[in-house]
Image (cartoon, rainbow, N blue to C red):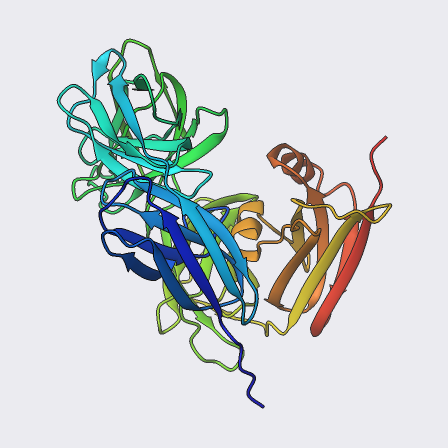
Length: 453
């Protein structure tokens, strides 16, 4: 039987507020984590204020009205039901945005400044003049993420500013500090297309991670960095993950140079196959020692991968194919292993799933709860569990993992990094509070937590 879903229609009217030029209209699904992807596009010709937009699926949507100037943007949310006709009125409120961008005491001249409106979910880019000034029309003010592209090939550290336009000039300040560096291998050869992540604090006191990619000479840079201590960690395909490096920038230092190095370790030839012997392409292979991820690789279309492993100590491979399942394989230290044969890993069938409903003793859901996982006696590093298994409760207190192999899953709940560190220290002492014997098919566990006294 074929079921037809009747699409909805939006009748959009724009009060232009004196703007006579052509306007663009776009519709997309709102997102809490990123800017919307605009999937429906229309245009209002000069002087036209209304447009009919059919064939909209039921649900919640965001409509963007965009003018010819870079900050002429505004959005509005609307919800439609099946076969619904919805009228939406949007009024444009033009005002002048006058701002000046400063790096320390120096105007930031002729630089591109990108603005992301946090609340209304739109973005625009403006170039400062020779005096670091911006003078443009603004339709929708509020809280903005501001990225100032001052230094070529450098990643700008994000600032936060509240902008509403109107009378007066707003000063947007950025620190006048740059971290630049070179990433090399153990022999001093530059590593191209590598990555360096900086952990830094935002204007709102949150910790954020920004990534710079190295060029053909292994060079990278971060611009608009605050004075103080930052943590940099490099990684690149085919190399062991680098250790985090602390970099401290004094107030009076504008450019701070660093040199970072990665080791190729001992490259293990790994072959991943499915249960029927077929190559498992694009399987994620993570190498870890204890709870620390040391390297990562992905299998090719023949199931082969070269995985960097630490040569002087034993390690564990965690293999997660794209279609699901999980395999754990222990390795001896390379110096103790005389065999040069490929490491053969056959994936167990991922024919089980697990749903966990976490709630308080009185039945209220527990959101944002993560779990340390031990599978058939092997502890999965939290970084692997977070990224690959994604076992974290939603707002409804539900966590779910699909396509996993049957076996015994031991779970320890935790909220933050400090809690999981304590769990890892005591893992061999206390029994897991949650033990689930996962069998083929759907498995479900409802867990009630008592509040701490």
